[in-house]
Image 1 (cartoon, rainbow, N blue to C red):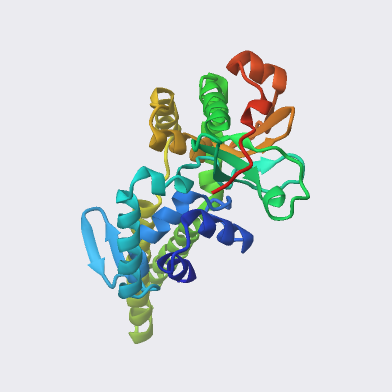
Image 2: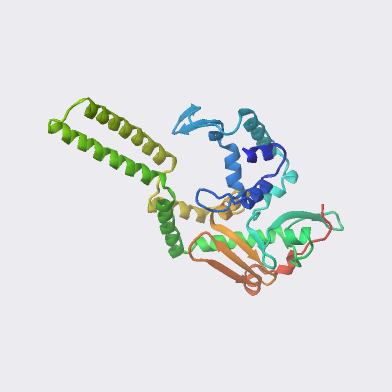
Length: 317
């Protein structure tokens, strides 16, 4: 509920992301919290006790955590920010927030803006240590330049069929490891069914009394209850087949990277972190193949630019 209170009181989503990560909060996949995860949480009506499955909505179907009034305040602010002019949303448009890391000191590089002598606004990323303590000498880097590089290398990664296949295999394995609820429920169901079978065998052998009948009824009720829980869990967290995963991954090859929302989706899905040095980038994707180091020479060759082009005026807003 504290996250909802902070947002209702004026905190920005990127600030909530940093706060949650500083508190050690992880996603259900045990990954760092990202902007999209916080946004989904703030819109999730489960927090006010509303349970949904298929086309059904059950008010009070789950325990409520957030008061209705607070939830509505947050919803109103989210809607207001959604309709706000682009110039007021510049901070939320930094695609690498919480992902771009200073290679010199290891701190986050966050989005900022500054004015040139001609009053033109420039958007860039700056090391938080350099900003707060001035003890880090890492240069600022232009927002569009670094985002373009990361997006293009992510697209390049998706063109590798073997890598896509390995990612699909990893997701299949991850599904088995993450959902501990479903295996537990199935184990409980197996034990209950074994108990019912034992009771029926006892009845067939002539052992029928009030106690055995009561126990059989209890087991039958438990079985029905567990089956409902299994069905609900399967609906809420369906396990994908490899074919479904590959279909979903291949769709990213047709993504329109000229659209900000789709660029953000690409980065949130595949990019774990980007470590920026003065002479190279280290791109860490969400797969088992580890990091990809891109040197200054490669960047110059592919993008006809260099890291010094990222320097912007010192005058800040």
